[in-house]
Length: 180
Image (cartoon, rainbow, N blue to C red; front, side, top):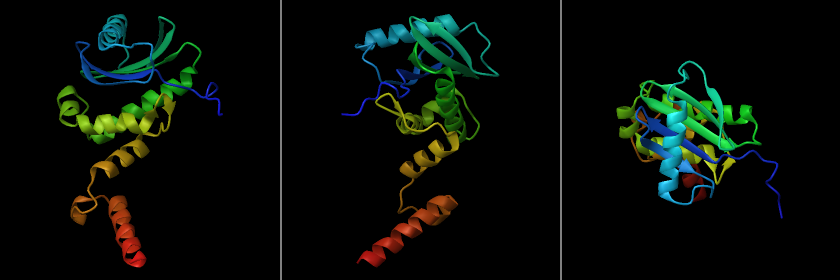
């Protein structure tokens, strides 16, 4: 049996609007078992951080034995929560990776309306970053690339694909041809 106690873990990733309402959230901990407790936690975190100036750089706070790294951009508030024994730099790299990936996916137009229109991409982004609390990836451009490769249909015209996706499609077609 493998022990994951030494691996950094994430309790949740929150993307809230400027009023503290959910845009996209993902919980990886049983600390908040009900939807009501999750919403209460989100309101608590928002109320404690809303008056800070986390627009230029990420900020860090300790609330209820949780380390919370957060950053605000326009009308979106990004939060990453870990236990009080987690490494703040690791949590900050998860937040930065999430923020960078969302920025790329929303084409530098990071606001609530654009985020809601592309909610599927943001949720896929969360899935690429953390799985069951375990950190999978923190590199924003790589996360965005993985998300776009999931959302791009291999049968779509090559003119609508990026160069990397076109190469992947060509490789896939060649592999299928050779295996027949």
